[in-house]
Length: 136
Image (tube, rainbow, N blue to C red; front, side, top):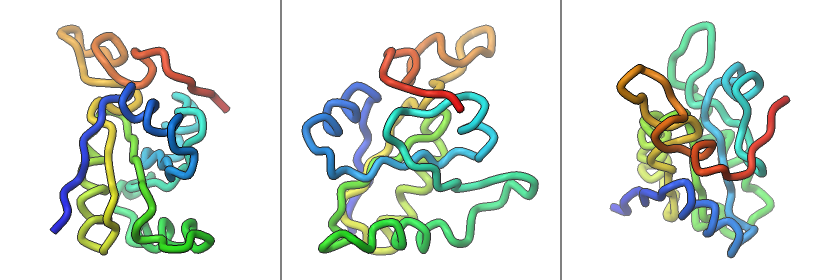
């Protein structure tokens, strides 16, 4: 079985600059995406969302539907991002089990890990690395 590729935010950004065909998916909740902000060029497909906070049973189907125009959707290079890298790792493993062959996730996510004072964005992550992002 294939293995999920782990990328730092900077590595992921560099790969996307070199290959604009990469499918970049933000798997956070709609509220996180809208109010915290999102990485430029990402598409929102929540892995979990409110109010239930259960895994989206249509996650893989939604990804597949968004890739229908690709010549071989299962070979598409996919990069997932979440808040800190935990949910994206879980979702990436599910995609691999569903037959996707080239799935990566961003290890520190959009906001990064918590620091000693329980704050995100101070140690690592997409925003910490000053990569392009937007806010609704």
